[in-house]
Length: 405
Image 1 (spheres, rainbow, N blue to C red):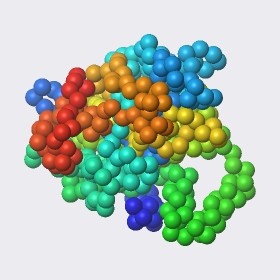
Image 2 (cartoon, rainbow, N blue to C red; image 1 turned 90 degrees about the vertical axis):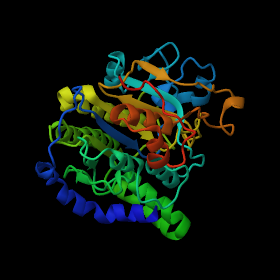
Image 3 (cartoon, helix red, strand yellow; image 1 turned 120 degrees about the horizontal axis):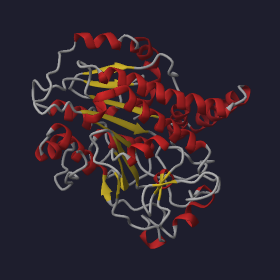
Image 4 (cartoon, one colour; image 1 turned 45 degrees about the vertical axis):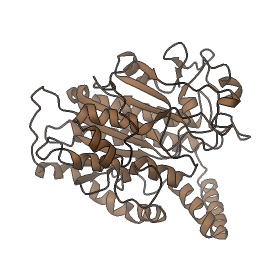
């Protein structure tokens, strides 16, 4: 993972310069035939790096222990910024009205108390497990989405994947061909990358880590640290990325599978409840989903968007009005092909005895089972391919049925 972080910074400039040319690259890809049943499936995987607070994104308002644990950042069904009730128990963060609309239309779903097999709390290892598809971290060179792409029958409509951003996410790296695209306006490094470098050097060179951290703080002070402008830019960038990817994927000869990552979800301090830092981030994600819907046009009806993160956050807020690294969280599905309008959860409860290690939402659904269900219904991958190739050694993890119309 050290190499991944450093390589990300070194290759950013080159990737951005090349990114604008990727639109033209699709002219040289093979044309796709339409399926006999008229379906033309598409899959977009969105990785939220930094660990999403699932209890604030889709709040279990009906759980009597929720409000006490989440304290000042807990969502409520009333007040000046009420959460959006999805059913009698779960409520959506008010910064996500577009997702709520898609949910009401029956084309979005929430899977709650979900997690990968990873049970420690390192961003590096958690993201490695999330994107590689293996049960544990390691120096794996391919991701589960690339292996799924490679497993599709020869001559299928899906012959290449779209990697959105300055570098290809691990989930889409591997032997199957990919084409990259990044908006030229994307920054070369963001706060999440800086955080990763500080964490990296904290173990390798504590003195350098302290100097780097202090330098970053001084840079913020010198620039005035206009937080509202920074957050506004982050929201605009999420929409811009989604808009460009949708334009490519809407074309008859465009990609059918894409992956992208949004950074900055590590909300240790000042997370905010219905308004604040997390609200800005969720508003950006919500806007990106709306851009996918509008940009894909008629292709939206055959599309599934999977939103996932490496792990969740603690059930109880910390002393800085934030949440620390946790375990279970939410996964979101959106798209015209989603059989939605529902929250899917084997809810474990938030009483102390029910929390994982006495601090986290307990995972009751394996994220791999959700992704397997989507891949099987969208592209017809067999149980064996999913268990041996896409997610190696996962035969015991069965695909969730009925996620796709």
